[in-house]
Amino acid sequence: MSFRTLVLSTTLVLGLAGPVHAEAPALPTLAQLEQAARARVTSTPRVSLGAPVTRPDDAALRLFGPDVPNVVKAMGVVPEGVTPMAEMLRAVLLEGSVATTTRAAMGLRVAQMVGSPYIAAHMVRLLGASPDSATWRAYFEGGKAERLTPRQREAIAYAETLTRDVNGVADQE
Image 1: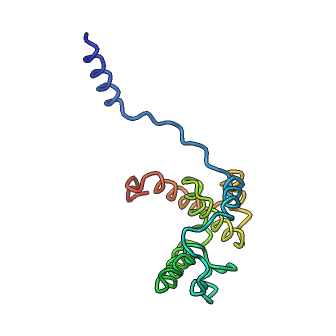
Image 2 (image 1 turned 120 degrees about the vertical axis):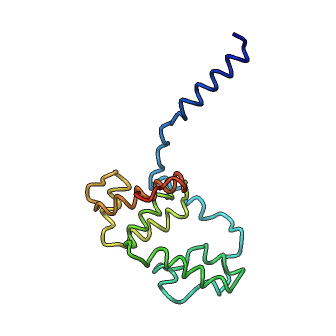
Image 3 (image 1 turned 90 degrees about the horizontal axis):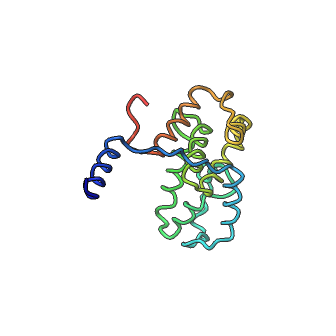
């Protein structure tokens, strides 16, 4: 058997066997994401975040925090985009049939999966202000899912599935 035939046959066999699934890497902890977020506090923004138009007075548009998220501040370079961006964030996080804390937890899981300390910091802030913050903290810090409702566990699983493969979620999921 020639070397070329050996390589082709090996490739064919491995191709038919399907992909080898490696174990998913460990997710960063909340402490690791917080440390990464703090390290970025002194970084230089790519756009000006100081335009006064970027500070909506409505508490809901600030997501009930002391200030609006930087993504809203960055829209100051396009002043007509500030309010729509703030309204979009408010709608995504605070409106709808899924509880705000569940959506924030979904966002935190996605932030862990993609390694985004910025999003994690905002989701931790939202979860920390919720009445069930201890339940979520126990879940994210210790993996204790038994205190979560079935709907909350399904929401986290859905966020994980969508994050891994946006095309891989079937209707029944």
